[in-house]
Image (cartoon, rainbow, N blue to C red; front, side, top):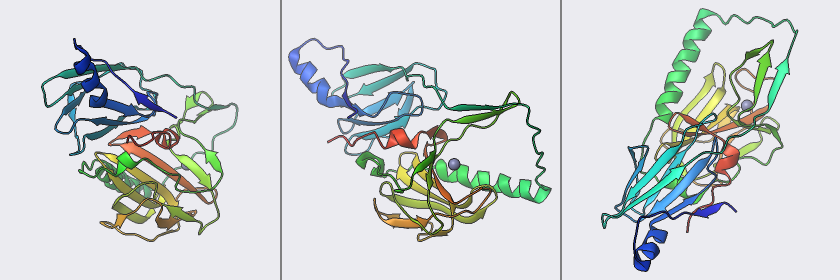
Length: 273
Ligand SMILES: [Zn+2]
């Protein structure tokens, strides 16, 4: 259970302390790749490192930390009463799975210019979908695994070929046969579906609000299309082997805007009552 109750307020009476307790609650791990759910009083202002975060009518907000975040952060809340709460956050460092491969002649892949142009276009579409900042509060209900498959790949892992680090893996991979159903990990609205992206194949993105999105890669099929509302647990797609993959699996990713979060940590952020 990672429901953390935080309180740090410069207040001088017991009543202030009591008020401050309900004024800021956080759930999730303060850790590299972590997704953090927050709740404060409605009509409060929330800032992270001086930047204003969206806050829902019910006081819900969310943020997260990147894979290699080593900074100290400052969360500040200004309550409707004018009272200020300040909470320093130091994401815990993690050890990622690093696989060193030495002395192997690397097969040089030269994608043709057409493929390069296509993957550029794919990236722009994905980026645009992940930039969405909508007032949905679906993220606040917490996440369930989108698949029951065995986990075959984790967030943050990286291969180093002959001393050259490759791009880290940012998804949580679930094994499954082509056609295995995938469910929505939380409510949301479909913000992108493209059946044939160059690297990621059938690619579906669901917007959960305030910049939190889920991406599902290598799909053989989607049951939903752009603009559709989906419910947590609803079948949305099927596992496939599309794009550049060696076998059928689901690669699930969670983003806070362009910050790539660890889906396994998103699953641990329990909703705040
Ligand atoms: Zn993957």
